[in-house]
Image (cartoon, rainbow, N blue to C red; front, side, top):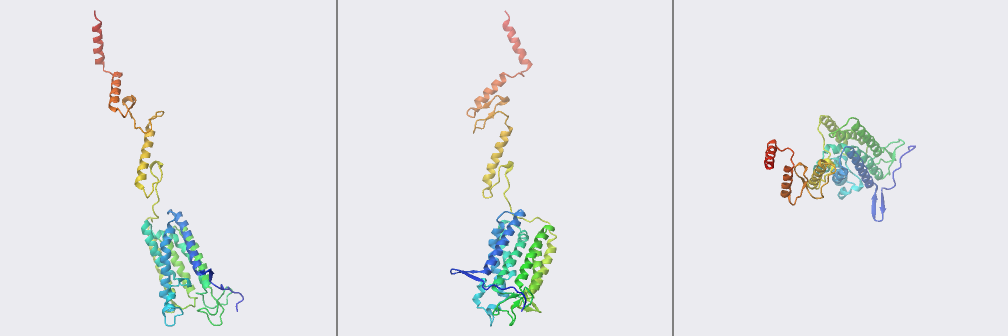
Length: 372
């Protein structure tokens, strides 16, 4: 008997009236919420529009849950459809009892995000880099659901942090009371990985999906050795569990993509944000760009007219007045031709620049009139 151990919860389900509250589901939901909050903050810091990650989560979460459950049922089909299956086939749908394959969740969740990104004109690789640390944290939180369900533990151990498991649980060894808390190992590994991703992304300015590739590579390393500690039923190939082979393949693929994406230099789209109208007339509403653009243009033209107008002169409100030639005054819009003629005659009579010939003719005519 070990000197110290970690006790398991006595129950993982509480009832609020007739409604069951399951710890496993609460851990999954809490993980999703934390991941979305982290993703939103990182997306805004990158220049994206607020609310984008929340909207994409509407696509990612249902796709991810379906994908995670499908991966679990396909890879552990003997638990539901084998000749000695401990569960009924219908229980393959009981997601609250545990059993989500991370690779299926990531694969179908990414498909859902891709649909959301297409509708917004956003780069999928930019979103993947943004949410990668949050996914790792969500996994760290979600693993505590296995703790409440007393599942996915490791082989027996006498270490002080050995996990107490009830003797009637599947996978227990007769005569052994404590086991490796693999849920705790993976939770700690995921939290450390999230910190590394945030640091590496900032330190090396990783873009084009390289942060996400680093997440996949880092997670598979931890998952490989943690998977080797587990004693639950699984398919084996050449002495390794199926998830260990999956980890090896994904690790190599992640490194290959990390190297390939390092050669990319193009810009990644984070969406289009409203731009201010000319002369600071205000932002143009994307829902009515033409109407507000026309209003902004008219406001800009009015501002230019006021700037060109001489100081101290004001025009009547609502009237587009015109100045007569040589500053003779404003022309009444109701009689533009008459006033224009008067202004022209007045200007001609008072023109100081008359020709010398005309002056001489007038002087001669006046001299003849004065002769006796």
